Image 1 (cartoon, rainbow, N blue to C red):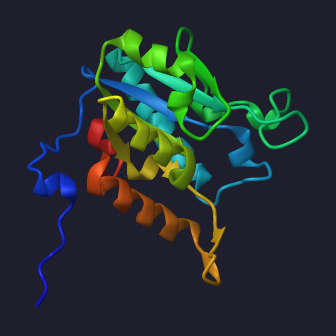
Image 2 (image 1 turned 90 degrees about the vertical axis):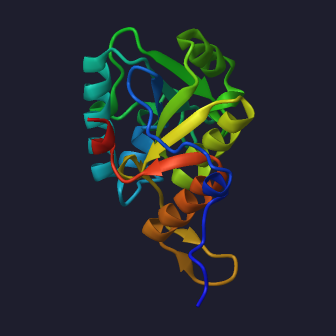
Image 3 (image 1 turned 120 degrees about the horizontal axis):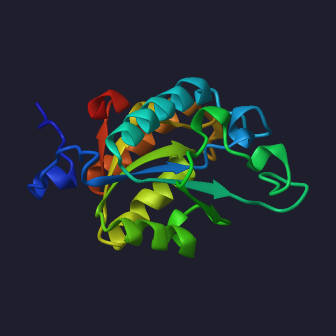
Length: 199
């Protein structure tokens, strides 16, 4: 009989408690139309966008800071800055006064505006949501650790797409999300089942 595996965070005795709106910044990464109905439409985008919308409503009601990150690609390509694909999904649209930070790489911390927006809040905890789990959400969560920040990811507020498996076949989106969240939960983030944890 084998022992139940434990995360590195558990083995280190980390205090794994979801942050509160009084202490955290809500970060929405790449909630853009390219993922809604563009070339990179994600199979789980509808429920995930709805979860983000519920989280945003609760965060705003509590007075928590919200930062939106958007990806800009090349003109005529994915996330064309002048096209519909780069625009934020209506359900996740920023409210007046919320920061919107542009990046050109997966890691949100490559955007100086994002780094400054997080610093300006004076908070050390991020409630991290958005798209795609294996790409921009993952790279942002991993980089947050390097910046001394704690991240918490509600699993229902992220999504992904099917990927070709280099060893053969296809990795389905749902399995990819599960695997990526398990990897992040090992060391980089507290993963909770749903945004309902914060509501």
